[in-house]
Length: 372
Image (cartoon, rainbow, N blue to C red; front, side):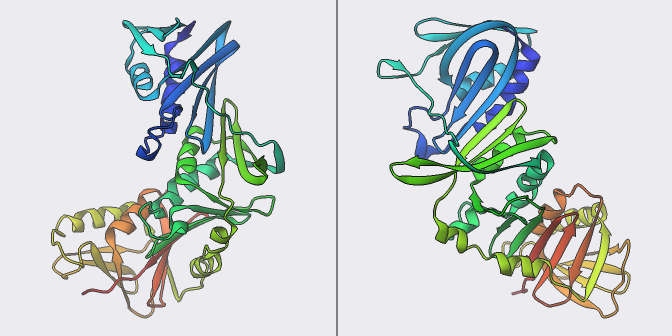
């Protein structure tokens, strides 16, 4: 089988993010493997960790056949480094042979006497289907992921809450409310590994199907995302108490609150000011990274926590009648602004508890800090 190297590299680079490096899964036969399957004019590259299954398809110029399961990291790393115009793939009884800049052999992975079979995850009993823009999935990846804490003690802080009004994530001091409308009523939790795979999709529409599979008498909730040559299927949590424990009303209530003040900033002006002020924050104390924001009529003065250094940033619109002070985590503000697609953003404040950074359909809630 001879492939155009450029197209093959694109597919391999897109699927590399699906390789699971979780040490807890190292003894699973199909973990950290990639399956190459062709029987006709399409080559499929498949990856799974038992919780999700990813298939990326590549059209072939001619009909051909191949089946190989090999080490994903090594194979994908090699393909990313070749410089030839074509890649030739063949198999023998024990190896996948790759010919490009040189000849390379990848041992086939066997489970006892037969090649490892990657278990597919299907949605045999669909309950709802709809279309969502690929750009919407990317906003979940780029914005909501910032609030995911894999080391959190609460399980809900490690997951993405998705319903018909959008996606929510939160930490102990911040939250992201990503608002968009889905045409059906749902309440599900998505894992970070699944959301990470959204980068495989382009901006065009993605077909989404929710459903279930009967597993030992239990209806296991599943979802499938499909677009062009990419298909991702995942098992979702069936723990309804976990879903119901997500503080949806409190988070949306805080994000949508009408504050006394809302002003608009140029993103670059604020980011540049924060970058410069953080250069001086070298103390290893509880106050590290906290900035003091003093809002006046037409501008904000941002100080480091010792009030030694400061920068003044003017509003691009809005004004503040009564001066207001908010202590905010500069690194978190920087992280929130860094994912902005817009050059400007709104900042709402006034209740002495939190501020809201908003742009488009995304609202970020950030708790005010105390200087200790």
